[in-house]
Figure: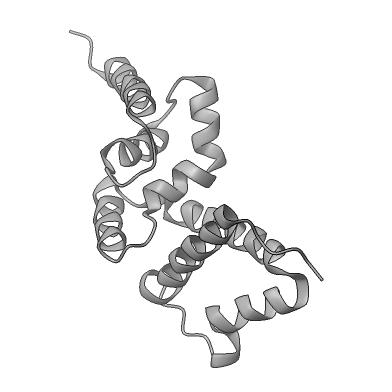
Length: 155
């Protein structure tokens, strides 16, 4: 029998479940038959493979959602973040920060390369519900400022 999840991972499971379920039903508007609903699929994963493996699946689903939303405008993400925040669900910006490999590469590299990366970082900086601390927020703002300077027209 698998070990129970730690308190932190149990919380992460609940947060990601709510995020993925909201996206599936309200954003992508997938209409699945009852036996393929988010609740039934997740319950089946837990029963067959354990909650730890189901958590891994939720992380992958969250990362897929972030990728799916990568083409949305900063305004569109901000509007979605607001709805999620009002419902007490992780925002897209927070999920990006936690799970996005692109975000991790930008931070490691220390440079924003294009407009897509710029919008990803902008979403994190303006999302006041994000779990980033003041120092990281300031560091991200510096990346944004440097990118802004690099794309300003030279006079």
